[in-house]
Image (tube, rainbow, N blue to C red; front, top):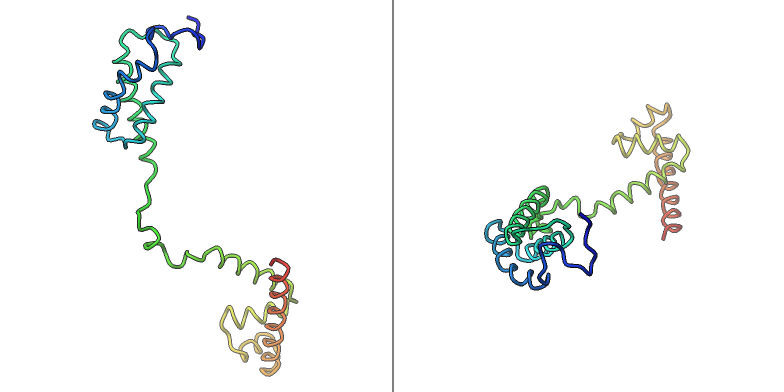
Length: 176
């Protein structure tokens, strides 16, 4: 059976589609909203989708009302299948959010910039700063690892920290 053109009525719908819509709208909304508990705005959208499908269907429909009710039931079931996969956020999501995640983007950017700044330092400076700041070792522990004096380790920590600060400032100036 050929699909009717837009000028010809769909077989089984010799009446005006707008008249069919108005005739069955209340019943179909009632089914979607009261039987399936679809929210009002979404039920109206379902109803319009059902009518579009009905009008695009090239098949002859003997009982238009039964076809539309069945289609709204199926569309409502599909609606809940799709919406059951997502969960709506609570209204107080901002109040309940993890405080650590509020500035997460800034923290990640800071870590990346510090890592980049450390990458510009010589290996000995990176190792010294890592031992002292990331592993929490004292200057005398750093001196033992680097096989040097405590006084030189203190000076090395200070100078390397100054270098990484200056490199960090330069990076931030370029990106600002």
